[in-house]
Amino acid sequence: MTQINTGRVIAGGVLAGFIIDAFEWLSSVVFRGTYEDMYAALNLPEPGAGAMASLTLGGFAVGILLVWIYAGFRPRWGPGPKAALLAGLAVWLLGWVWQMVVDIAMGIYSLSAWMWVMALVWTFVEVQVAALAGGWLYREGETVGV
Image 1 (cartoon, rainbow, N blue to C red):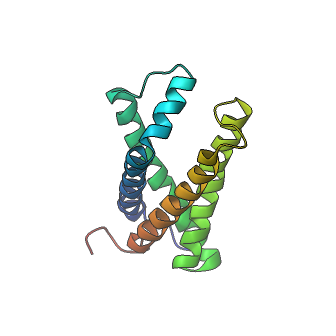
Image 2: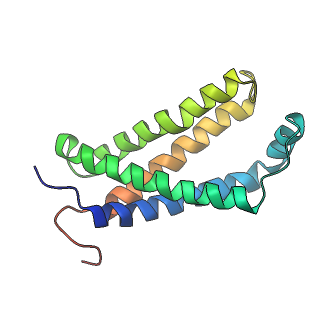
Image 3: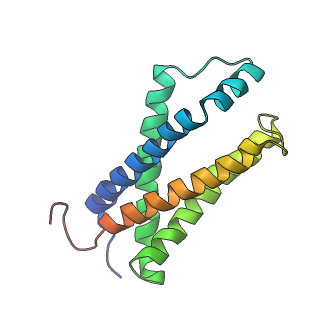
């Protein structure tokens, strides 16, 4: 069994994180009114610069984790889209679906809210695109830039 290529995990993870952050930014534009209504209903201010910086860094951390999981999946399912999509599914289930369950349990979303379904569909596509891109960049036995 070969070692995981840490440099390629980071490079692929940065690419995946960029895609995650881009999708998240786009969702803040597309669903702006819905987010504003949610903040108002929860009596919360809109996220400021500090929160946005933390979320952006978190997107890159998730991207790196995603590619690391892909690198671990490669020996079992082979390099390529299948392993990448399975890694994306694992990250989506553990990151986004579980967070949605918590949000529903805490009353942030209701089970009837269309945003609940839309958020899961949006993030599923987001994570799968990021997994494919990060997996495409990952290679074993090569350094970044080769």
